[in-house]
Image (cartoon, one colour):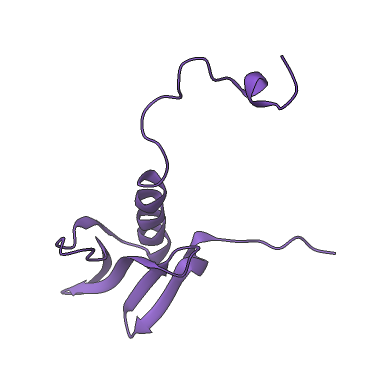
Length: 100
């Protein structure tokens, strides 16, 4: 049986022509990817989704849809969980239950 292959572009749902909404694991939208055209050049702008009165933030401009979804996903994962270094005294061996 073949393994299922997941790619972060699967989080992108095209909500209108040229606009993708990045959807998180709990079905919450976290970023918008929009197609931009400047002359003959095509690109993508990535912004955060407005939350609790905060203005959307531009995360960057990219030349491919894959690069833009990657940037959105990296931003999303970087905003989750603890920031900074691991707590002092933590190590993979100390996290195993029942081992000293």
